[in-house]
Amino acid sequence: MAYFSADESLVRERSDRFLRRMYLMRMLGTFLCFFPIASVLLERDASWIPLGFLVLNAFVWPHVAMLISRRSKHPNQAEFRNLAFDAIAGGAWVALMGLCPLPSAVLTSILIADRFSAGGWQLLRRAALFYCAGFIVCWPLSGMEIYPDVSDRTLWLTLPLSTIYIIAFSAANYSISRKLRDKQHELEKAALMDPFLGLPNRRLLDRRLMLEFERSKQDLACLMVLGVDDLKMVNDLFGREAGDYVLRSVSAILRQETAPHDFPAILGGDEFVVILPGISEEQAYAVGYRLLLKTSEIRLSQDSGFQCSLSIGVATSRNHENYNQWLAAAEQALVTVKRNGKNSIGSAGRA
Ligand SMILES: Nc1nc2c(ncn2[C@@H]2O[C@H](COP(=O)(O)OP(=O)(O)OP(=O)(O)O)[C@@H](O)[C@H]2O)c(=O)[nH]1
Image 1 (cartoon, protein in one colour):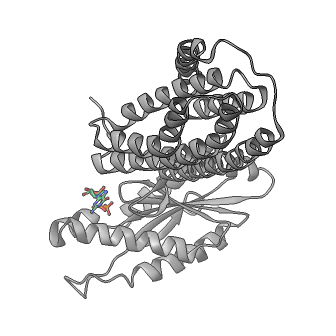
Image 2 (cartoon, rainbow, N blue to C red):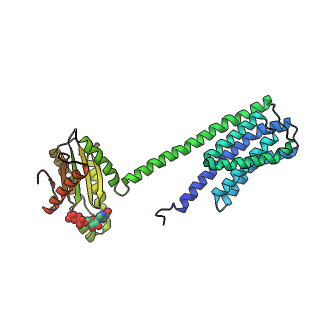
Image 3 (tube, rainbow, N blue to C red):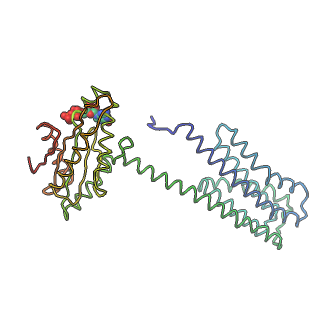
């Protein structure tokens, strides 16, 4: 069973964005293609029928395609069908232009780039088949003649297609890749931070502990494990929301009362950790007493006399073989403090 599925409104919003982007790019593309294709068709004395189709393709089709996708039960699939139609039309116009080199090359390259960026090789292969189908059907209609001349008019009318469209295409792609980068950043943050308490979670803590333990071989570091005292009682007496409030308040204090190079994090349940690089045990105790004082100021709306307290175990990085041992020493110090009456600080060294 899937643990997570994006909710419907999110999927709809994503699909709307995709359709809007396709609509704007299709409007721009067919508009810019109109002029060089019309120029070549007129030079080749084409009848009004292909010219009429060209007008429909350039000015009506983008809106029809948008309506088809929007009204479809599966808008994205409908849009992929529209893309197939675009490829057929592309092949048809290249055939009807008698493979006139410049506009044919620009139109074909744009189709290739567009399809590849929208769906990679898979979409490109599919589009190539539709493009060939459009070409094969219309090639006999053009008398199977190659039209190698590129008039000055066609040349100038192809320029906007080869410049404006490509710039717009790059801008659209850049905006997508920027959004992806932002999303990736958000995901990385979500995977490493606790959204409820706004502190690094166990996964990030482990990475950081390993790093700081290695660093502490040059410069001593201290580790604090902090446990909220009697949280079970707070939950039982005042409700779980009150317990959550206490945990959030302690988290805020850890963020505010530690230096920028210190590293407060969640160990799990009602326990926290602070890594204090480059400080001695005495200095760690000073930080610990400040945290005890601040925590004692936490008040509950249900009971203004309630006094929150912490127990803190401290361990220096000395004499441990790895960061797990370092953490275990601080946890052991915390257990001793809890056993000796709580609301205090202790360390393996001072026990
Ligand atoms: N409200 C709330 N409670 C939590 C959370 N995580 C753990 N707890 C509760 O914290 C309590 C921890 O219980 P204990 O390990 O006995 O600790 P304690 O009640 O603080 O007692 P001492 O450690 O001896 O001070 C349990 O009742 C958990 O349900 C949380 O995110 N929110």
